[in-house]
Amino acid sequence: MPSSPKLFYARPSSYSRRSTVLIICIIIATIIGFIVILRQTLGYKCKFDKPLSVSVTWDRSSSSSGSSTSDEGPKRHKVMGFVGIQTGFGSSGRRRALRQTWFPSDHQGLQRLEESTGLVFRFIIGKTRDKSKMTALRKEVAEYDDFLLLDIEEEYSKLPYKTLAFFKAAYALYDSDFYVKADDDIYLRPDRLSLLLAKERPHSQTYLGCMKKGPVFTDPKLKWYEPLSHLLGKEYFLHAYGPLYALSADVVASLVALRNNSFRMFSNEDVTIGSWMLAMNVNHEDNRKLCEAECTPSSIAVWDIPKCSGLCNPEKKMLELHSKDICSKSSTLPADDDE
Image (cartoon, rainbow, N blue to C red; front, side, top):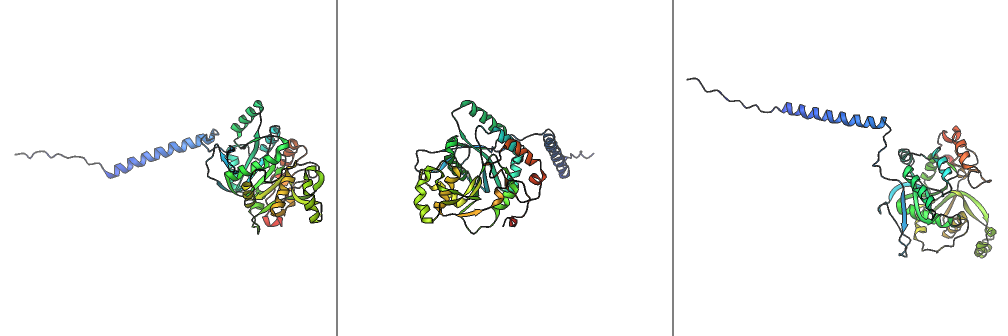
């Protein structure tokens, strides 16, 4: 009697399964690689990057001086320095010149600069009732994404108020070792500024700038200072030139903690901050590399001192300076060379 046929059931080979999975992984990796290369080739710009620009508003119903942001959460980002480039509605040409020189005009370029220096760079501007100017600003913000917008009227007569608002806003957003106020008409070397701010300092409360002595009585509003000047035996006090100076974190923390109108405001922003620094008894650190009239191997900021408070013709002069290798391509000297 013939034996009944045996039935065989094919079992899937583990080798075949592994081969199939491997082939699928290779195909997926190839597709992903192709997409990445294609995006880079076509100049693809990621649309999902975290926005850099942010608006800052204050809770005016509170007696504290704290701030809240409309686009950011309460988390403060840790950086070595926050550099606020003070600008206005009539300074679009200056911003254009900056973006053609030392201030990157594209999102990725700005992020690379910030990663390499440990510094954050933003244009600082307030608001205006002129709807056409606000519309133009919104377009510029959307195109470049490099602003910090303050909830304060942008007026020349209110620059001291804007400066204080800037320090409060920057402090609310960033846990920074230094907060730097800069004007939009100076030529800056971010790499050298980074090295200067990174130096070890014995004082936690530091006011860093190119220091000058100015007459106390040039402004009638400063007459309150007369009794103190007699006590000091002189009619001058030391303060930094306005185009560029930095305050350490401890100093800014004290400014943020001040109640409104605790300190008097004066017509000149640099004099205002200088008088506050004197009242707070902070350490004054004078550095002449922050106010050089020409590019040198060690210059950090260049502007037409003493002719102008900044570059005399910034839109033209900025491009001229950047075309010189000594300004834009010279090597960065060690921080010790600033001693």
